Amino acid sequence: MIKREGKNVTASLEDYLEAIYFLNNDEGVRVTDIATELSISKPSVNRAINTLKSQGLVTHEHYGSLFLTEEGLDIAKKIAKRHFMLKKFLTQILEVDEKTAEEEACLIEHCLSADTVEKLEKFMNKTLKD
Image (cartoon, rainbow, N blue to C red; front, side):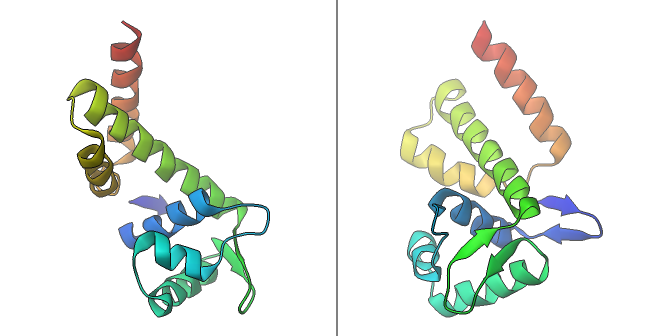
């Protein structure tokens, strides 16, 4: 879970930020695309987007496209980095199959502290260089 000044971004909200980050293009991201990506209803997406908007992590015009704010983009990049590192660890170090590694990286990425992520990154850099 990403911690911010006085607020935490929940695992669920992290999933939304990550989805917006991966789906983003010049026109932004549509609620429908997020719902499809995460296999959830549009009303659920709208509730989460309203929370992200109130926290200053996304901008969203009514019935328009979504965009990550600078802070939202920073958090989304951190989430994506953790995800890719965990998937790489699972596939290259533990030899977990791709599909399982993808699913498990999604679950694990929300549970690790910043300190653990940093140590895992150092381990991966050292181990994969050798």
